[in-house]
Length: 399
Image 1 (cartoon, rainbow, N blue to C red):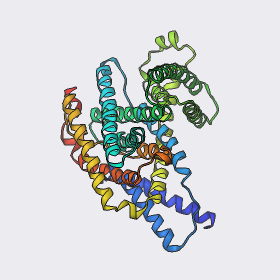
Image 2: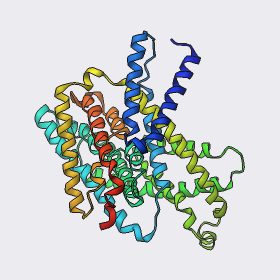
Image 3: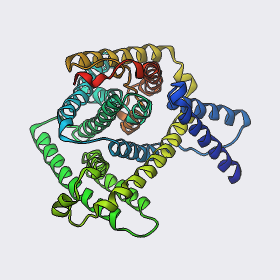
Image 4: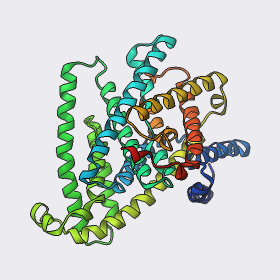
C-alpha cells in the first residue's frame, strides 16, 4: 500500500490533468472522456509496472456514477431556459428522446436473444444501456455549439437518461412480465413523484433563500442526493425530481416579484436569484470533480485484452452503426437539421451505471467488452461531429 501523501499527490496530478483536458477540449475538440479513460488505463499499466499494491476500488464506481448522474442532470437543467414558446420544442424532444430508447433497446434485445439464446427479459436488460445517450458526455461535448443546438442536446440527453433509467428499473422490478397492473402502478408512481418534486422544489428553494449560515449549498446538494436515494429504494423515477428542481431554479429570474408574493410568498425571489447563480457555480465545480474521478476510475478498471477483442470490435461497430442509422431516421422524421446533432449521441456514464446494475445472472458474454468499445466509438464520432458544429447551421432552426 503506497504512502498517503503519494496517493494524495497522484490524485491531485490526475485531477489537474482532467482540468487541462476540460479547458483544452474546446480547441482540440477531443472529448475529455476519451482522455480520462486513457489516463485511467495508463495509470493501471504504470501501477503494474511499479508493482504497487492498490486495493479493489470497484465498489466506488457505482457510488461515483450515481452522484455524477445527479449532478450532471442538475447542472444541465439549471442552464435550460423555460418559457411558453419552448413548449412545442420540449414536447418534440420528449418523443425524440423516448422513442429511440425503446426501439433501439427492443431491436438489440431481439438480436441478443436470437444470437445468444437467452430469455427476452435478459436480452432487453443488456440492451438498454446501449440505447441511452449519456448527458455527462453529450452536454460537455456540445458546450461550444450554437445556443439552440446546445439547448436541444441538454434537453435530449437529460431526457434520454431519465427514460433509460425509468425503463431499466421498470424492467428489473417487474421481472414477471409487463402487465396492466404494473403499468397502472408505474403511472401512479410517476404522478406521486411529480407531486413530491413540486413540494421538494419549494422546500429547497425556501432553504436556499433563507439560510444565513456561510455553509448552505452543500447541505442542499446532500439533501437532493438523499431524496434521490430514497426514491430509488422505492423504485421511483427519481431523476424527474432533479430535473424539475433544476428547471425551477434555473428560471427563477423570470418570476415577477408580485407574482412570487401571490404564489410563493415565503420565497425571497430577489435574494434567491443571486443565490441560484452561486449555486450553479458550485454545481458545475462538483460535477467536474465527480465526473473526472468516475471516468478515471473506469479507465483504470478497463481490461486491455477485452478492449481489443476483435470479435467485440465487430459487434461494437455494428451497434454504433445502428445507433446513428436510427438517429438519422428520427431526425428526418421530426424535421430537424442533421448538422450537427446527428453525430452527438455518445454513450458514457449512464451506460456504465446501467450495465453494472444488471444482475450478474442476467449479463450476456461480451457485453461488458462492448460497453467500453461503444463508449469510445461514439465519443470519437462526436469529436468529429463537433469539429464543424459551429459552422453547419442550427439543427433546431426547422423546429
